[in-house]
Length: 542
Image 1 (cartoon, rainbow, N blue to C red):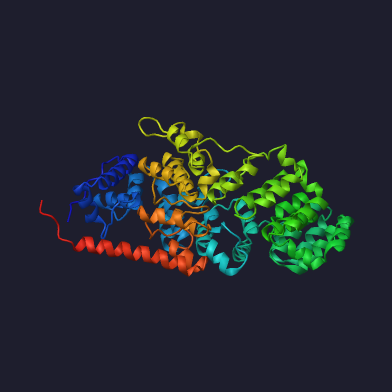
Image 2: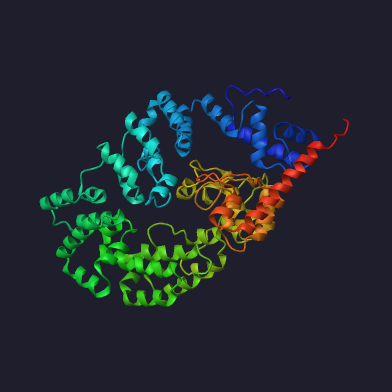
């Protein structure tokens, strides 16, 4: 057994990363000593050595169970106690580990008031926010952590206003009731409506029922939480304030169907635009999702106000949605044929349409998307387009990325945040470029990026930490890309952040593709078989 190496009093995380990269390069070059070190720490190791396994080897050589434990110790020695504690608390909340969270709060009571920035709700935000819709009990269990939220509340966590608003957006009924029992919800019309408290809604309206925006917002909250009696009552009040609304509803549908149609849109949208506008937008969006092109065009022609400058956000949203889907390019073309305002004016924030076209292997949409936007000139986009010469130009003679701050996702906090990449690094740029290249079948570019330090085992995916292989499971026609990753040694045991499942698990249980799941399982079985054979083989005398 090897003797653990000694970690310096003030260790450098960058130095440890370089040690892992050098080990991986030495193993790839056939260095017997490096391979021996790796196999001493990771059983059944099958070269090439992935970056993830190289980091695991380095961590174990320093006497730690894994890379996370090693980096946590580095943080402690460098005096980053609270930063380390926040990371550990996030992990405990994700795992729904109430005891671990309780221990952290006892050691770091300042966690109860910690916030990343003014828009962040602290640990309560982590426990209550939902990546997706949490509108039924099962989905609420998937996406939120009620036990951790209650512990934080009882321990005295500061409840930021955005946390309560988030409960309305996620439709987390259980958490809404928890906050109500604890007396933490604002006593306002929209929260009374979300709770289904008709008596309180009536009392609030008796005091001031002439504010159309507040009434519409409360109506939308009642719809979101399926309180039909409250929704019907508030709809009648909205119609009393705007008689034309009732005429439009009756000329198109019925009151019950109208309420049902408004069960998903954001309540803030309804407050801003009014229920009828949001209802029409919802119909157009459903036609896009349902692949009803003729109906989509007819609706936009009859509701041409949606093509004006005031509705740039909506137009951009339609294009972004289409860019995620392989067979919806015709909807973008049809929209642009109607001369929408987005052809002349841009929304006041970057669109994700081009980003998503690369992410979901839809680069065939770029000719129509570039009628509106320019493809960013950076490393990941060049890689996704297969432009090897431009990719090479982004590296200096020492192999470092030029103009790092100008590259996605280094320059895009929103894109990093869903991957828990809070602090921008060059490695993130490399890894996303590699992911874009592999996804779109540009394997010459992918090989070049691997040679320059890209991590094949990066925890990248379209929405939450997983792996490139997880992402490819849901992209049609990705067989060659999957084979490329497997042949170059991607770790097939990586599990995603949300469901703790491998890519094989995604294929079997989410996509229900037994053939793909069986293929992935077979690749792992063969890899383990080779590892056992190598371990059993006699070693050459030195």
